[in-house]
Length: 337
Image (cartoon, rainbow, N blue to C red; front, side, top):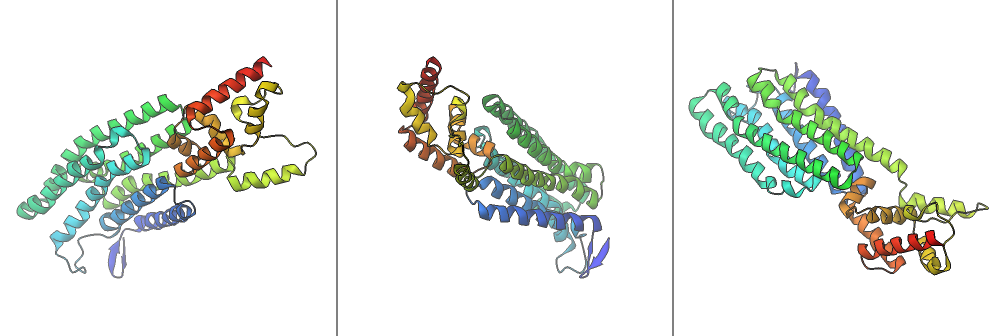
């Protein structure tokens, strides 16, 4: 503990706060480059709330006589701030995952978490003045709701994996659930096990920080594997100068012989697709939705829809069904030829 300005601060939490600020800067900076990627925005907003809670509950040692508020008011601020952030978790989980099973939790979470918080810290604690019992009682309803909420998230992740079979997305969801689990069990460490403020801060705030770091690096590594459109265009220009350029064709018709005359027109159209359109066409044929494709390729859903519209125009089709039919017909004709 150190004295600063002239507040009393927890030294380990200072480094955690600084690291959180750095990651937040990176998240918002990356978001400005791709404002259509709302998932990054939701991660950054949740981490911002975690940062504010970590400052009020764990960094600054409250109550402090230097501050102009009453001691009881400072204690309410310190204890209730974490529950206010927790009330945002169901909405955050729904916005990030898009699971329909979480839609009603977006507003139900606020009721089940914030109503007990206000009831105990605004009415019970000022009247009876027993902070120990207040901290324990206020956690009961949010804890029971948390069991329901987390089971819903886990079921949604399992259903999504069985539907899409995306291992990378499954890993991302598991990491998010673990981070939220650590955060949600913070009151157990403090109210029931008697852990210090420093321990509560490190237990609850470190996993969300690590998850945001993982998200930053996971997206960066994926973009290194999946070239952005600008890089694709540059690569295409460089390929033209080579003696034997190879046409870009979709994965679904990769490694096949020269097409027969009956499918020559379709072959010419497929050759017009860019590498990104080629990739998205293959994923559409696999049955993935625009949202699933955006998460798999680490691009915004709006970008996926733009590429989808472009490849529809090039192939002269109107919907996914026509795309699958054309690709299936082309593959069959080509194999027969």
